[in-house]
Length: 181
Image (cartoon, rainbow, N blue to C red):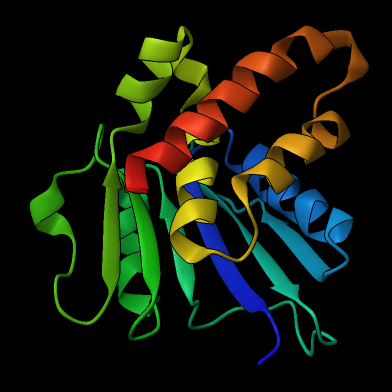
């Protein structure tokens, strides 16, 4: 069976949701996969949910639109409320348990990984890397690619001016992967 995974990545604006969606897409391209990435900039008020969709496949992608995703990365409670019910039966979700109560996650029809993204990022030294912790956990949990694929793609999404931040982001990705291993 060909490799295939689709995801909705969602959180508050400013949590780096678009950045990790873009990172996932570049990592997929670097791995030779077909990729779609759609950032969703809706009319939400400040503090609302921001999200993006990513499809990764060895085969041609028929549509970049995802109605029933196979996976989710959920960074905040409003995003859980909005997207969890759409997750396909047997799907995988990474939940930022720093901001979301574990009791809110569905227990039977899907697989949830509770990752304290903010706390792990704090331990590394920068809360703003919670998104990188989440993508590391996601790659480890889904197995679509290795976490190293995302680390290798960091230079595609982090401008050369901020290249000094790549090692810390790589460390956050590794820590996220270890949190679900």
